[in-house]
Image (cartoon, rainbow, N blue to C red; front, side, top):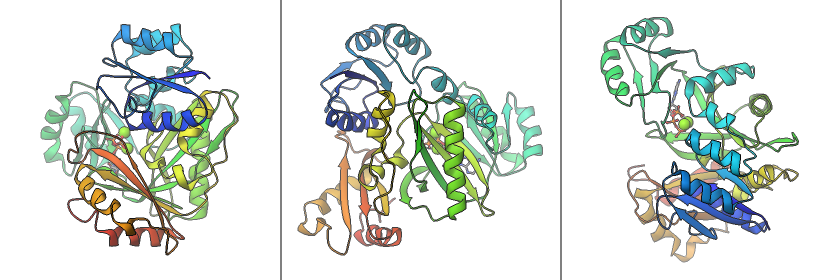
Length: 379
Ligand code: ATP
Ligand code: MG
Ligand code: MG
């Protein structure tokens, strides 16, 4: 079997490797943390910084195919990997999704709407654009943000200076976006292989708590026509950007049923973890199929599902629950599947695992989650 090299050793790499091993592939990962989530299940881990050129060279020497599990891969490293090995996903998609402005332009040129936005280079310009886009508006660093870090919701022009000072400290460009008063947040994950076959997973409805994904539910509680349009937009983006592998498309649904794309992720996505038991093919298997140019698997939904994240503060209650005989939830039509990532320190808000709750309906799964009390305190 071929060896797949994974840049990054986090949980996304771990679940790629778990899916890929079942398909007969070997794995090697590069990550600075010894015993990383991916390293624990891979054949080997190179312990080094992501931007370490020598380590990247070692990875490419030992891999037939290279993939990544995060988008902030150093351009120099990507270039080297492309020269020395096979990187089916290429570097262009990384270049685009590493920068919010480039990403927005690419989405627009795929014919898809984003929230009205402006590049911000000075405080004066921020004030001017706040006048044009109105308040509230969201100021974001163009690069490096995740879990809502590097963002400021500006409620009035009076906040402009403080927000500008704070976000400028990161030293990256800034983007101002109009605040979309959305009804729902959803995401659609599309897969495309090098021969141009495209498949999308069913749209997930996402609930964030403290800007961190808390729940993803499928089917999303939106009109069928909106769902179809969302899936079509994801296909449009995947084709327009010549994606190979996965692309996750986060969107806002307005009260009128209009769709705006928020951002893209060129990799498996937290909101796609529901596919592990609820779809005929998981997002991780699909990613392997796409980068290895195999036919894509069926994305059919097998059952309604709610995925709930296990953050650091939820580990104790989850572990108390899992040892109880009644944690084996196969009655009342509910099946629970716990996935833990093998991370060592359960810090607050750190993603430690997730639970897929399969049920006859999303409502029943939500009721089970509420009744379990695991996510009750300090969500
Ligand atoms: P992720 O962890 O998903 O990568 P991120 O830090 O890149 O997050 P975004 O996805 O841009 O951040 O924003 C985080 C959340 O903030 C969104 O899911 C949404 O709830 C809210 N948000 C961001 N931009 C807007 C906007 N323009 N209008 C309304 N809400 C927004
Ligand atoms: Mg993001
Ligand atoms: Mg996001």
